[in-house]
Amino acid sequence: MISKEPFTQSERYAVSVLASLYSFRMLGLFMVLPLLGVYASDLPGATPQLLGIALGAYGLTQALLQLPLGWLSDRIGRRPVVFVGLLVFIAGSVVAARADTITDIIIGRFLQGCGAIAAALTAMAADYTRDSQRTKTMAIIGGSVGLSFVIALVAGPVLAALGGLSLVFSVTAALGVIGLIIVGLVLPHNPHHQHSLNRGEFEVEHIFGGGLPALYLSIFVLHAILMASFLVVPKLMADEIGFPADHHWALYLGAVLLSLPPALMLMRYGRGNAEPRVPVLLGILAVVAGALLALNAPSLWWMATGMVLLFIGINALEAILPSLLTRLAPGRLRGTASGVFSTSQFLGIFVGGTAGGYVLGAGGVAAVSYTVLTVSAVWLLVAFNFRMEASTTTLQGE
Image 1 (tube, one colour):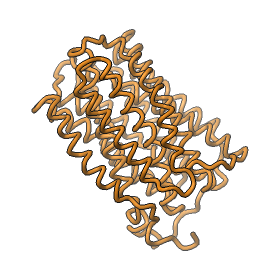
Image 2: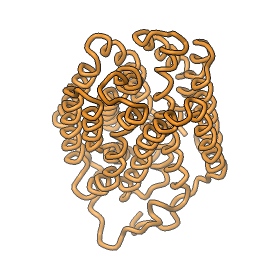
Image 3: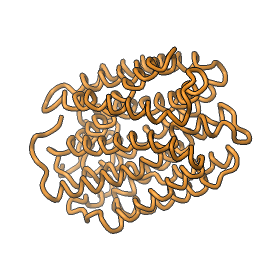
Image 4: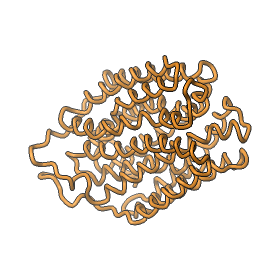
């Protein structure tokens, strides 16, 4: 899956800039992940259900806007969409930083999600690189996101211990400003930008044909399980296992670092023309086993083992799934297909957080575990039947 052919100089520069942009944006989002279940539980009006909504809220507006903004980026260009999206994301971060109640946090998170630029960024990465470099590009970006995940899981609890959620959201807004600077001053102009589509060129088969639906489902379930797990795990560590919240960063750091070598092996396992189902299935098994073990860990050691497995699957699949998407989606509709993919991803975030909160409130941790197990069975069945098939129809000239 990872080509040995080197990047050109322009590709190397563009990919490094985009990886930095991804990192700064995702760092702010990841920092909140292990904190809301612990630090927001004392806010006025907080319940398991509302905490779940706060955790997944930005996923709903992201899901609603990814497809139209991905479509828009195919027509007016990626850069304007990304720039405006970052401005809205900063505004949402400021609202959340000034929040006094759980409702204020939810409003800020919804507004953060309106900065829905993931589809445009994914398509932009594909625009800057040749097809032979696509998987490597996504692997590098996935690695940068993984690095952001590590830094966020360490920095988030530290910042929260110093200034609470207000400081965390303020830093998130500052990271959004850095993203604006990158887009405005550092990101190169794209020499491979696709021209506008002619009327009549769009067909449903272009973005829902071949193996693409399995990829949409996979990214949905991956993020739903991630959100449901992090709604429970931080509080479980603090209250049941007795591991203080301000020390959680140490466990996250160790678990992510240990997960990186096997995750990279999974990414490289399907190199060339090898069957991609094998690394995908192994990644899914790691996610499911890790989530179930972490949700039911009787001790800190079992919790750490579960988190290592969870991060192996997350890091591998976050690189493999987008790379498969860009190989199967038609070039001039890559932004639209990326929009569907990102919509599925963020809808998974919303459903995982919201449904996880309701299931937790109704049946406790055991009910969350049973739900994860049931959904995972469907996910494994779909992934097992996945085939590396492009859309049945192609655009004229492609």
